[in-house]
Length: 372
Image (cartoon, rainbow, N blue to C red; front, side, top):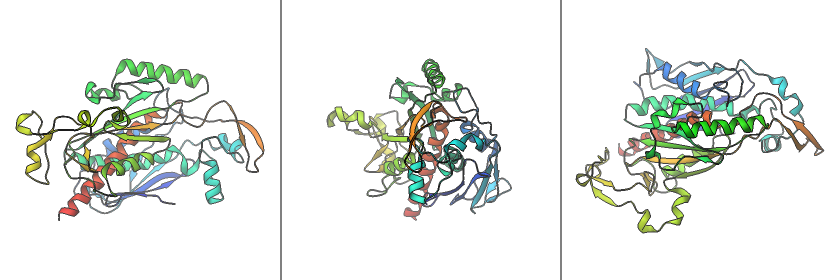
């Protein structure tokens, strides 16, 4: 089982939903980065359960403890070990699932691959495992901050309720002002009402998260099998419940012609945009009039904003009766118990940011190694 993410900046995770703890080891973190524990905890608080009526009622503080790799408030360059204790498991809620395969869950595939599975909350396949990703992402964000790179995600669609695709139309600083983590307060209310309606029916619903990376220099990514958008896509598709990834204009762009899609190069002297890059002086003098490419051309960042969209399916656990089969293939029915999210989007926003931050930092470190 592969449990490590990244090449130079790596995150190795461990733990199960109803085990003693969730944790991990971050390696490759640059030395001398000031560690802001309040910031790291605030990122976990954005992901934690029980934060609003549109999330699961599981009550976990999700307090992180750093075990190594930090001395006098700064990183040492050594591996950073961390742990978050599980304290509010209701394992008995899952006893009726011990011999059943839940529809659209990993129960069937895990059992057939390994010959065993942890039926308590999904075990290793639970979305609770994303705690480790958020901690790793918070550390990556602290390093990226010193480079002037920011990562901002937000809920852009729930069910049929969607924002305009152009992120420039919104004040992304308002994302954290509502429980849906949507920068449009009116749309956020509509989304929340829809989620509550779905929850009352014992059902679930999916949506889309948009993410924007600003300040990324020119030159990140490899031209063949390590394309930056492929790295980002792989990172996003590794998140629980993700079903799709697109960057730039994505699928919408197929209806246009090349003359409409091409990002024309111009001199910065002719625009108000400043292109910044450490790779070469010439690139500082050149920018593009548009950014249909989503900040990546030929698999390599071009200095423009990187933006992409991630599609999440409806949560598979429904609080209503469903048909299924048991381990022997016998047809049966069941009704899930316990505490579950009717919509994963609000809590997935920090997870998307975390995976993007780790991907960008990993690629940045690879580029620096290439230039040495």
